[in-house]
Length: 260
Image 1 (cartoon, helix red, strand yellow):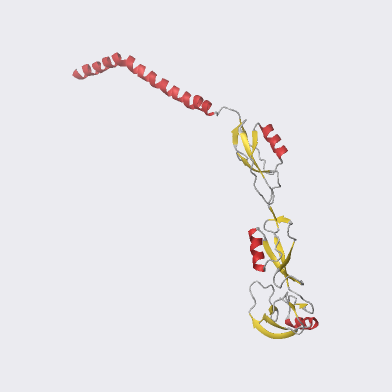
Image 2 (cartoon, rainbow, N blue to C red):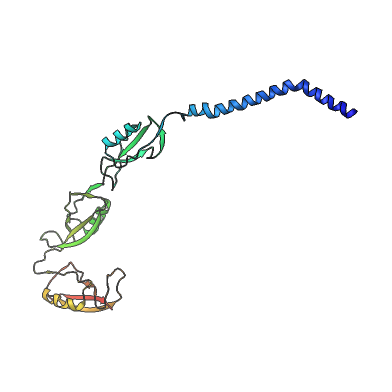
């Protein structure tokens, strides 16, 4: 009997408080709905998610006119940055870099910033006439150029070992990283003969050539072939002393190092 009264009491209490429960439940439902509206509708609207968007086209390598028309047709604006960049693959004046990058989805009407290519960087070959070989190497390196072969040339007034000229000539514009040959004075060479490069030739083939030039065979030394020597065969010339490219008087003894 007591249990029945207790149950009846709880039911009566619930009936009295039911309106409050319903009110709380309705309030919770309204809060949830409001949160969903804010998250799904209001916030995207403020963030511009519902604004029109488009994919930024790829402009790399395009000329100024084509790049501008392409952006305009896609619904974007453009701005060219004042400073360009040197590049070995894209011609001067064409688009090198773009921001945002190609393929990005962006709001229509956004400004795409463009950087022009300045093309290959060119430098002027410095005037090396009258400089030593070491000074010439330093000057070429500072200019971003590579010293190529050293060529010996006869000259009546420029001392031996001093630069006569370059190939290409000084003042010409070339690309950064290009090779420049340096012509070094061999001094007065009247009555002298240029010693050619015999490297890689068989010593037996060298003897008659040396005789025709008026030189004499000196000492023959055998050694292991250097790693960078192509197709080293026993008897092939590794180097000579004096070095090739020198102007020498008749009957000069030429020493050889050959592959053992």
